[in-house]
Image (cartoon, rainbow, N blue to C red; front, side, top):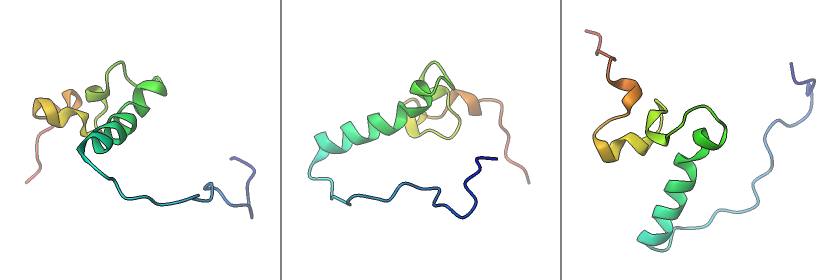
Amino acid sequence: MLALTGNPFWQPESYDQPVRDRTEWERIRSYIERNPVRAALVRQAAEYRWSSAGWSTGRSAADLEVRPTR
């Protein structure tokens, strides 16, 4: 599909770095949670089903109709 047969798909990682404090953690978390918004998949981060952004409100809005299976 991407015509990348035999070529690396992922970009090589440049570094790993520990998170130093709560402020940095919040900045990183917010950046990650906004990715679906930047990609125009949703209007708000909490609308994205697999986002942790819904945790602050108790759950993702996309999961309101999801029922566990037994």
